[in-house]
Image (cartoon, rainbow, N blue to C red; front, top):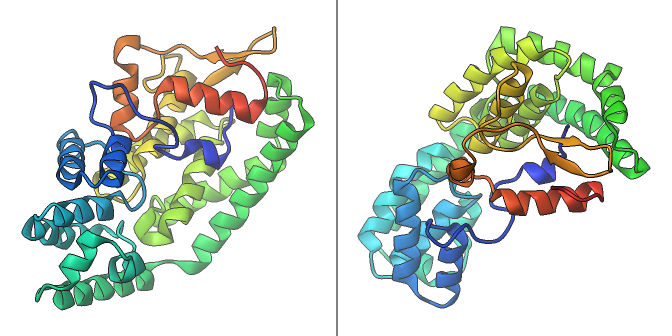
Length: 301
């Protein structure tokens, strides 16, 4: 079953189980002006290699600085700038106590100058025509999905008809050529939205599971160099495993049942499923089921 882009976003729901460090616990701590606690929670997430949502890195720097750890905040920002996940305008202008404290420091102008230089270099490397084509093709892909969902017929037959559509087949063939010519179109080449579009086209290439399996290690390699989103790797991993007759790892793939409900396709190691999801930036399974139920207007078991 295919999923709209909005359901692929990480950290879209409430907190993780209490025994696991949680990004929203950090947000709550910050809202209560418990800056040191906020910084400590985010440090624990970093140690666990749990990805932050967009601009989460800036929150970590904010909490460190607001807690009086300005040196650590500056060191963190300096190390993170190269990855391009910190919004330049927010870095320069967002009105927050920790950031304002950093801006008063003597090292701030040099940090901002480096951030501006790196941002300009990233923008210069973007393949604008390729990014535009990816976004246009994704828009056509998503139009098919919306039509199915809006029709109220989300049966397996309806989804098979979408998967066999000429638009998706053309997208798959086109992406194959792009990958063969340029390699995987990651964030550094086409920006975050372009890279997400490339992933979704690959994710929806169910008529060519061999291609999906070939793409997966490219996406994993991109993730290792901070050039892809971890949740994209998780979802494509599940799609590839199921196509190979194996249980999924992250519990992202569901099926339609005869009684009108949806249920999870085979998966392994239920006890550690949510922890695996957490480490890839995905919401807990229970929350994911709620999102699917709201999207498809049917019960999800």
